[in-house]
Length: 113
Length: 113
Image (cartoon, rainbow over all chains, first blue to last red):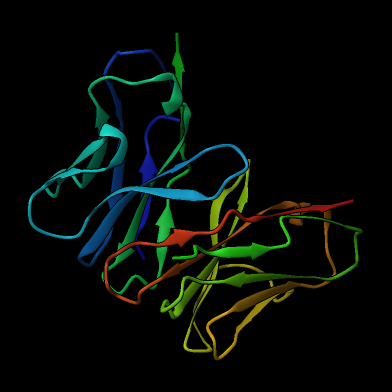
């Protein structure tokens, strides 16, 4: 089965600074990769996904991620963060049948003024 | 288009009782997955249903069960509740194998006292 490791549990950053949230995965089969965001007391919202094709994926709210097959990574980036980006971010991996999506432990992004 | 609806939003139960949570997926989605989210364990996969059949199951005891109806609505049941079952239970629906990712509901917050 596939698994996901998010390398940072917490990332504090100042407003308007760039940010990178790191994610590594392992799987013996071809996978789909996702980033989700969770605001307090809410469900998860899809930010972006990699299915195939271009390794640079753009998502909502100015986020993007790059799929690196050789390093089995899918890091999330944003060039300039806002206070409203403060939330928990989850990286997820799924087999291509979407029958078993596994999530990382999450990274809490805190944007400070 | 309506999103994934989970009911109830909040629930308080006593140890030893049982509980049933409900999830209505997005219209047309036939796959429904359930996750337990706790601060200590993160997001853990419970089970996935497709066309009324459990297709995949995580590592939870038999006290956790579920079912899916012909209209794709799903319920999960937890019997003989323990304090450690206190968690946010999230339901997610997807178009099977289509790579759109999951759409999550807002969750049911279960507190066992």
